[in-house]
Length: 295
Image (cartoon, rainbow, N blue to C red; front, side):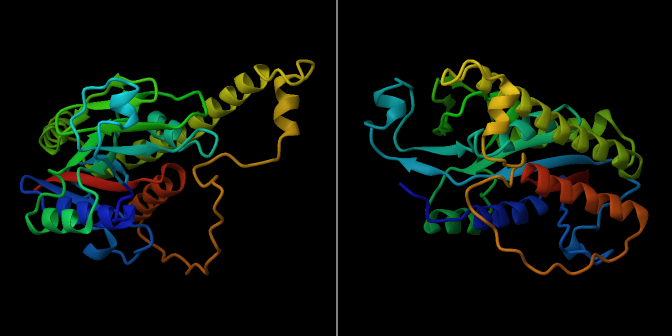
């Protein structure tokens, strides 16, 4: 069943709830809100205190209500109905998943996050009870790994288990409680202030974006070499014979109309680095950057 809520609505609700964590301070960084020093702009990070970069990609969940669903009927998975699933963008449409895997490199905390609800009533109930995060599933892209084929893949889950499909295997889902513990431990393991780590974070994200494109090109080569329509062609010849399309997460069939962009305000050096990191998160990984600190 198609969800009634959009990724934007869900992401807004979840982000706002995370900001109110008791033991942790969660600061979402929005590069479009560029007023320095305003909480609404996301730049109220305590630069002289430790912090951890958290990257979230929001997903909508589709609900499966019958045991005739493919996961149960054909794949034989032990899912209880109703269960939910969210789709992973196919490699042929975008390098989104590949880029998230490369970003999930130990420096960053990176997750797909999806709700265990799909209706307006469901999100309103979770919101009013401050349970949006608790009613969500967090899955590390690295837990799934690189996807080399062009097939449709999903993560299917109920209250107890999660599976990566179509060739099913169990994946470890992360609860909000476990995520809090991971972030808290990471803060304790590296107590350097945010200011001292900004360059490292930017370099890590930039390297991940470059690495994902290199991986994508290698997979294109493998695809070309397996093309039996004309075995005389080399991989590069096959690729060059295809319609040109740029690599990147914005590579989809939908065209986004251009909009006028206001000139960015000049920021102090460290805030400019935060803005750059947030822009990279959105442009290269389609992810929301949140800086986690202790209260």
